[in-house]
Length: 189
Image (tube, rainbow, N blue to C red; front, top):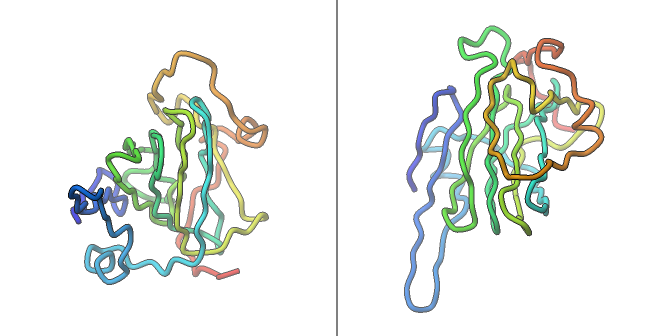
């Protein structure tokens, strides 16, 4: 596998090696030892999937301490434009973001450590998005920020029609109203 660093410390793009022949293809999606050697030393405890149509926006989300989560995200079918925003208190890249297109064809993954808000826009109908988390979901720790806050400067792709968001995502606060993430001990719930 190839690990590509990004402009945000800790956020990494992973390109797994694909072995193909006349029968089809094989890819190892996750191997704890290889990921640890690449600097991704997470103990993943939960796998999640979302199925969405083109134009759905999910995010920007994170979990507050002590229930914070690191995520390893990928697309099985379809395509998304995936975004991570640095919300770490005192970080030199606080408020900056990186984005990567993840598709079922390119099989790329993105590792998003604790201290980052995460979200994506779906670029194709019938998209299946999957992600591993290193901590369990805790509803009372659920946080978010408006995906379209101009202060973040995220140039979301124009898909040519109105976007679809959950009511919860529509109500997220603007970036200047969030409480920055602080690195405190994690509690597994």
